[in-house]
Structure formats: structure tokens, C-alpha cells
Amino acid sequence: MPTLFISDLHLAPERPQTTGQFLRFIRSTAAGADALYILGDLFEYWVGDDDLEDPLNGTVSGALSALADSGTKVFLMRGNRDVLLGSDFAARCHGTLLEDPVLINLYGTPTLLSHGDALCTDDVDYQRFRLYPRDPGNQQKFLAQSLEARREQMRGMRAQSEASKQQKTEAIMDVAPAAVEALLRQHGYPRLIHGHTHRPAQHLHQVDGQACERWVLNDWYDSGGYLRCDAAGCTAVLA
Ligand code: MN
Image 1 (spheres, protein in one colour):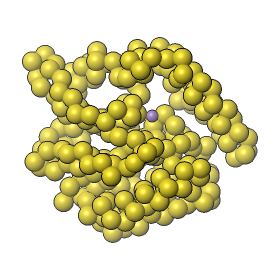
Image 2 (cartoon, rainbow, N blue to C red; image 1 turned 30 degrees about the horizontal axis):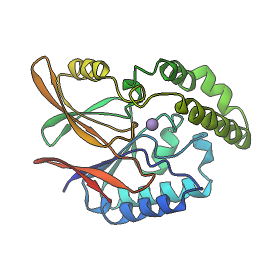
Image 3 (cartoon, rainbow, N blue to C red; image 1 turned 90 degrees about the horizontal axis):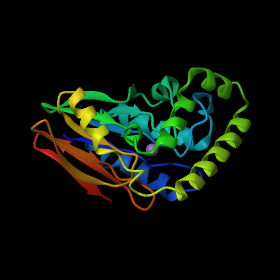
């Protein structure tokens, strides 16, 4: 049975068709897999693990826990949109929360998993902003507010981020080759799987004479899709 990778679903109440597609994927395709890895930005935004009674969050965690109970292991990684996703949500999904990056043994091939935003080092503004929601003090202050106040603040941050993206070139928002190579070198030249850039592709990097495969996962804005890996290798499947 294969292992599947998805990311950047950006699930939100405003996009019920994507949620529907995700639920069908969980009940059909994912149910036939060894494991499902969700490499960040499962949600458009996440205001804290105390928001589990929200209908969308309850539906998603219910589907994932049923999948895990049926025998498909569920792994979750935080993205930049859902950086506050925590162990309570992972427990509700009967899944395991992963650090970013994490090196796994995928059918004998060392494979490094990451959301991918840390690799966009040409975007200096973003890298500076990236530190803010990851600061424990800032997280504490944010989580001390009411759920409604947090949602409101998150909507404001999203609007700001979308506006600043309009000012940036496509090249700046992609991963920086030097950052990719440094990461591959640091982890012993593994295969790399990441999302975030919404530019699904298979790349080959030559690093210090070593060939490393890099897979970029697709987002789910227009259509779904996943990366399917087994002992023979990986294949991108678009829905
Ligand atoms: Mn992202």
C-alpha cells in the first residue's frame, strides 16, 4: 500500500466544495494507503486548538480520526497558515504532529518533509514576518484573547498578507535554490517533499555531486491532488 502526501488545502467555511473534495479523498483514496502525510496549510487559518467545536474543524478531525482508526496512519505538519495547530488537534485526529522539517525512511529512501515556507529566503520581508507567530510570547498573547477576537485578527493578517503578495514578483515567492541545497546537504542528500509555493513539480538538484529529487505538492484551490509514493518511487496524481 502506498503513502500519500498532501498540503495547502486551505480549508475554510467559504470553500465548501474543497472540503467536500477533501472528505471524498479521505474516504476513498486515503483509506487505501499505509499513511497520509499532511504537510501544512490544511486550514486557511487556525486560531488555536481550543476551536475544536467549530463545525469545519470538527468535520475534518472526525474524518481524519475515522481514517486513522481504519488503519491509515495520519501525520500532520503545521504550515504558515495554521502555525498554531497543536497536539490537541493531532490527538483529536488520532494522528501524530510532526516537526518541520522531519526526515523519514520512505520504503528505504531517506525523505525529508517540510512545509516549504522556510525555503523562500529571497523573500526577506516574509522571513522577518515568519518569526512573529512562532514566538512563544506572541503565541501566548494571541491565545489569551477570545476566539472571536482571534478570528478577527487573523482575517486582518490574511488581508495584509494578500496585499503585500501583490507587490512581490513570482521569483521572490518561490523557494531559493541555495536554501534548498543547504537543507539537502545538512540532511545527507535525501529526497525532499514540500508544499507552500503552489507550484507542483518534480525537480532534480545536483548537490555536491549527489542527485536529489524534490517534489512540490499542489494546492487545492481549484482542484485536489496528492503525491503517491511506494517502493518504486513517487507519482503526482491530480484530481
Ligand atoms: Mn503555506
